[in-house]
Length: 188
DNA sequence: TAAGTGATCTCT
DNA sequence: GAGATCACTTAA
Image (cartoon, rainbow, N blue to C red; front, side):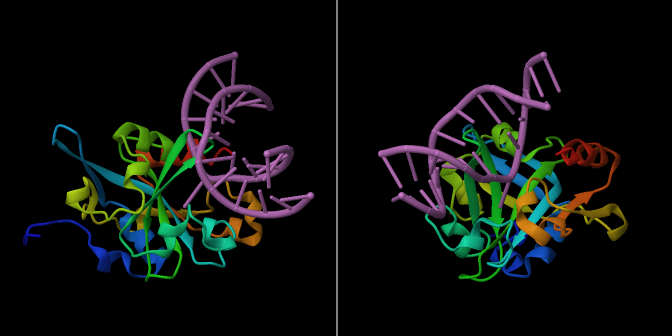
């Protein structure tokens, strides 16, 4: 780790999930492909899944083999398959034992949680691994997004979660591009 | 608006 | 084991 390393480390993720989610806006999801080339993609949409009480979270019914990474150390990936074909990319937050994570839903250049994983070639092999250079997938600091650019909305696809479904745990950058993506993903 | 898709979870 | 569910996308 050099002085110029922009990578967000464990201490960044070892904080309240909503804070992490908010501050991930503008950060850059960074991936190294099989040829060794590095690409960076600004994050414009995320959702927080916070704690065992959150009925929208996989962790709300306790620990299972699948959601085990959510209970693990912060700054690690939680990647799972949804609807039999879509990989969802989450980064774990909070201390070990507290199940929480932030779902990365949209990038500046790719909107949709499943489309971005497909686009970047992210799948199960990252599950439970640390978000660092060695593993080829990590997050770097990026543009500081001001509060006036941020919109908070309910999460997508969690209508089953009772009053948790209405909580504004979804954060988007309301730039013209993100605005368009926000509308697109809002139809449920 | 609905189909596709299969791992995961819950209940027998 | 069987059946339901699912943090989505695409085509129509």
